[in-house]
Length: 356
Image (cartoon, rainbow, N blue to C red; front, side, top):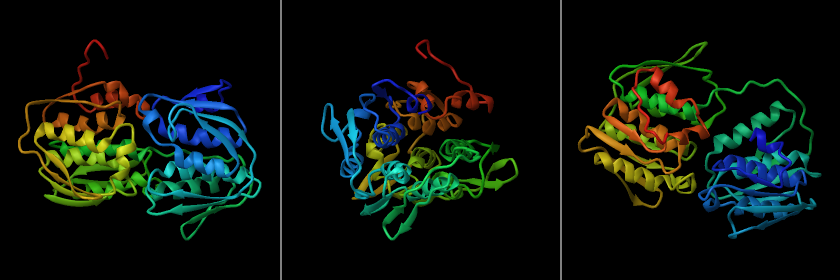
């Protein structure tokens, strides 16, 4: 993101970074930069139409280079004419955040009318709160977000630790025979939706204590059944479901719909990899999933990652129970480049093949 936002190149390759694709689409549009935005083969399968439609309504000329509704896209011009758009709330909150952040720069600001169920709302709220830190306003009016015109101002701001990355350490603590871990840079009053991992992991056997340094994780007793709604935190699914599978915890889950359009179809990927220990992730009804835990834990398992950083990190904690081979371990570089080094530092032995 830091490199691409400053790039003067006509073609911007975001690789597999969905957040970067969505945020830069809005940014390059309102700053009137003619760009082609593209990415990996999987990125070209991830929908961008709701954001493009909204920007077109606001006065953008954007064309699809290959397939309608999907990257790559070409931003040609922008002549603002409207200050109100409709956008679905159940596909990606990143579309909404992208529009919110550029909204103050529009002549009349923007009213964003969110249609239907709102997914990952904590991330929309986080966007509004961070915008306020830099001097602009975004407020809810029912299902509408109102952003008046304004100017961003410089401010001193500390980026907090990443709760999404922290979730894999909760998983390791849950599955390890013994564990006391301190995760620095995380606060109890966090803005992030994935802070929900604290409550989600309690019945899975992890107690959390906030200190001046961060959060301390310790083992506690676990339950044998959970019900979890991932609507506000879908990225936690790959940390939680593998834990349930190995700890003999059956689960009923909702709010996983958006996983089908992530770096991979994460529902299908989870079903395939969980089955390697005999666990079954079924979909008994629309929007409902049920996990039947592992029937037997093998001595070794090989996990495919599907070009998805969360598949690699989500299944890594299985190494506390068996020998685990992670295919394409470098995928973690997208969000947590030092993950394997950190894992090794807590005593898990790693071996790399020659292609690593």
